[in-house]
Image (tube, rainbow over all chains, first blue to last red; front, side, top):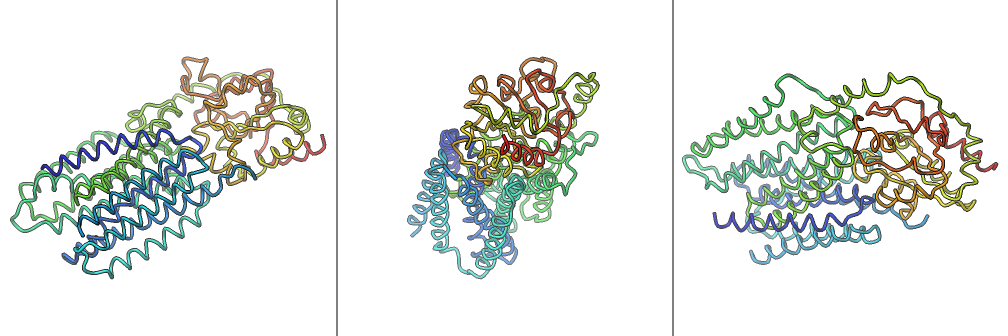
Length: 93
Length: 464
């Protein structure tokens, strides 16, 4: 339970950091912000890797394998599409 | 070793924060995205060193499939389809959280033994939020892609049914607390979460999907954070919280720009309400005089103006006329006309969408202005050229208290010296509300497809 309180503290403080940082992003970049933030939420991959590689049971391995595939789409697709969009924003043409 | 892995997660979280901070300016945003990606790489490498990982074959196969699919999607997607793309990515993130939660539950579950309360609740939250995010995102993306009907799908006692479903899921969770070792109950709880995701999104109309995509973006972050609670990983908790906060901010911005409250979007059955009020609003009004103009006349007006503000709406993107608008702007600038673009928050199909579409058409970003920046400039502007936009420039939002869009922030196009509307017809926009600006004496209407009209204007400006 103590661990949970520490985790909750970290969570709440991070939400406040998130509000501060994101509020400064101009509307110009809101679409790449969303796809980029999306890629960051693919950090679930970390949990997926452990689930897929720990070999607890066949079922957990299969669930972990699917989770790895899902989360990798999120990470790879998210970062690349954000890069593609940001490359289009030019000061002059 | 364990401490080193923890430090890797801390480094990753720090890099995510710096990366998001750099998104504050287009000049630094690419480097910011790169830093976030490096952070992710550090987190992944750190995890692969974890002693719990004994086999890599499934990781390699899953990673290869996911990378291939992600790479293909990121390359193939058209910029107009970006809302669907983000929706699908949200969904995959949520799905991954649900799957990790499920894997943890099955790993920890021993016949007859009770899960610790905090672990159990974390797992339930992770599967619930993850499942809702996955199913809801797929429905939202389907609506945007028009595979799923975009109109609100309503049935009697819908909200009551959703509530029962939610409580049913919660009850199953509580049952599992006192009676573990029942995989079928756990599976049913997961199905309930998926069903809830579908049912929460189908009553929302296609036009309101931008808000839903933002909200699901937030959920995908919360799902990642709850997974962090499940596996006691602060890196996940921080990253998930950042994304959750980002999604909430964008949801608020979109709600404000669309003149809707948050609860109204979620529970309103919303596109439906607007369609009903719109029917009585405008269409019946007696036709008043509008001044129709020709491309030749409009070109004269534009060519001899000192300053022009282009106001693009989604109609511009539908007609695929971004390149034509940029061509026209280039010509005008060569003549010494100052050209700017005014971007309303709901000009596209998601926050910032129109900026991406115009950037793709090589419009330099210093010419793109958001609503607060540009509104004071209309007063000093010779011509406002409105292309495929309607509700976002309708002065009824300021002047007509009984209008459904009253209170919605708009672009003050009516303050410009002249207004040229490129429009298909006099038909009202999707809110179904007539626009008094059409009948204003300083307004010129150029009817036709936006792309055709712009091409004619380009031709005529060359002749001026």
